[in-house]
Length: 193
Image 1 (cartoon, rainbow, N blue to C red):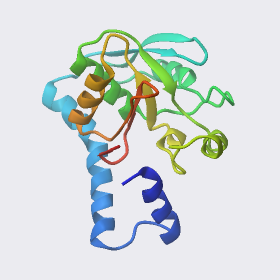
Image 2 (image 1 turned 45 degrees about the horizontal axis):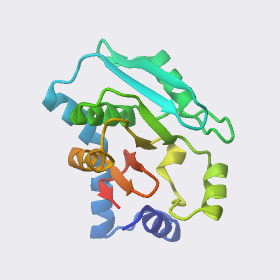
Image 3 (image 1 turned 90 degrees about the vertical axis):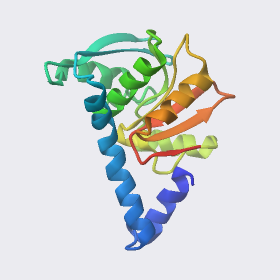
Image 4 (image 1 turned 60 degrees about the horizontal axis):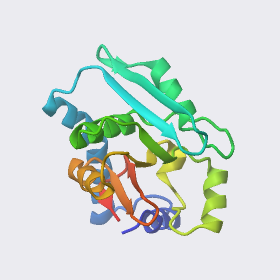
């Protein structure tokens, strides 16, 4: 099931229906939100977390520590929010720290030390709507608008391998865009396309 279909059903009903399916959707969302911290605990990955990005639209590069001494580092999060801003409007939005944890885990899993190439980070609602009108595959209620999604590639890591590794984490949504040479990851419910 695509994100658009889930979002459209949500919009038609004014929320999640009080049905078995609605209950399962709520449960899946809660489980996805808890999956990344649980993976960290099980892997003992509570050390300093550093991550690197190259924004392909602006050319900006960043290597920053976003988590240290048992907590998120506000200056690192701010730098990431700025780099992952909507490059069309310049709007900066607070990215979900669990998305960063997901990327950190993904990079550790594929053992590729390079910077993530960013195809799309945060998207303002206006940008998302404009893209929906001119492109296919853009969800009406995209997690990009909530700072919970990013479209990436990782130099030195085969795209198929990156995709399979993201799926194996079972920590949110994973999309595979082979023709465009990127994958989508988000911290929404576990699903794939």
